[in-house]
Image (cartoon, rainbow, N blue to C red; front, side, top):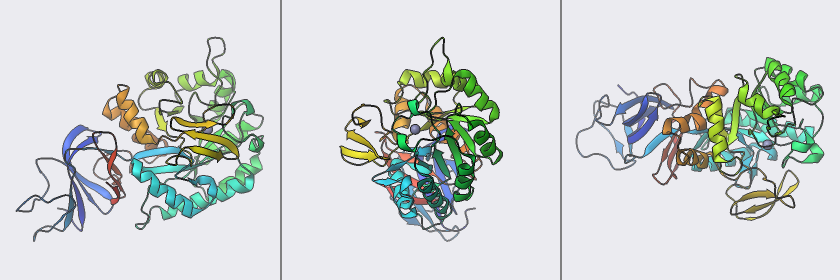
Length: 411
Ligand SMILES: [Zn+2]
């Protein structure tokens, strides 16, 4: 029996760990309490007409519930994005929890229900400010009055990178590993730092990897010119992820396998990949999944503050960037400057490229949840899990987003 006010997402095509099925999802107190067959088995029904979308039903013998008729639309676990710099003009580097709140509210329009605000190479002071704001966001975003995606910790991307693989990272802020600085960043994050991207070949990087690993931080090889052997040393020290695999990395060739080959062959490493169709060729995404397996690839957006804004000239951490209809490019070099395609685009792309719905869910939600140790509450539609759900229209747009049982976006 359902106790207290509940929400029923009626008639969804739910992608669950037990397969995809027509179902009604019952949510109460922020968690999924039942995923019942659409026949209504297990769901106490009121007599009379079926409710219209969003109507409230009450029966004398069961508590009130709001019913939303999803009309057979797909329901997937909300997207979990481990690599988001910003969107809609808001940036994790603003160092302001108000910005993060606005960012969270933007992201739910694209079905994102949890994410890691991600820094770029910047001064120590700017990084500390950003990590402090995220720490505040982590606690605030679980509160019922938060109307956006949950913040599940920070991703510090840099600043210890290979200059020749920096991409759009601001060169002036790239520097050598500094253990004292890492300790300060950890302190500023109030232990909410979850991912740290670093080039493992730099002098002093291995100590940084070991120190962070001991504190449970996922260390990710990124913007790196490491050889295969150098990257392997990093893996032995505790690197367990690669940052936007293929992008910002020494490429793999048959005589110089490089860090990419390490990522492909080391079982301990999960691979982030930007599946927007531009950063990595679709066939390379398929190759990556084929080699690593569907459980070891994590789609990320690398979304920047330009996502959702009109075309024009912008700045990315001081680097001039031109935003066009086809993407964001470093002015002058034409190199890619982060992404403006949210994870929803990756999900739709994966389906278009021939991946099954369950695999697309793994890559855009479940694998990220597991990576951060959140698999008992996020990344699946099943009883007992957080009610973080995206209901999608047939055209790949979002019909409704629910975070922690609250409907935070609806068309
Ligand atoms: Zn990057």
